[in-house]
Image (cartoon, rainbow, N blue to C red; front, side, top):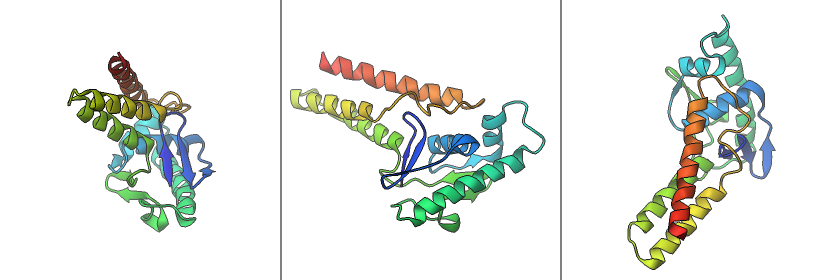
Length: 182
């Protein structure tokens, strides 16, 4: 299974796009930006509805999570790689006080972006011509993972700052790449 947040939020089972839409897609976006960490029910309710959640917000959230878990379980059972498993075959697990989305190595574009940027930083610190060229190439590879604004198409009350921070990181990496090119 592959997950993408550096642009529109997407899930792939091999080459097949798993159709995740509406509020389950929004929940997925928050969980992916916090991959392998528990996200509380309160945080998810805040992201979905802000300061004025409906009286049945927790029940609605549990319904979204159940729908998302079904979609991910089907994909996991169809042959997903590392990170699959968990509640009924899904990488989406219930953990007090909320939920955690388990994502394996190489499954999330954001993780790969971070790895490439870190490797580029290590190379550029060496200050040799060859290591500077490699750092530039690594930053180019990191930037090529972006397909648009972070979590494009997901508009949530308590989520905009996280998405904006990712977009800011992209800009910083772009500037670093230009500096290396010069």
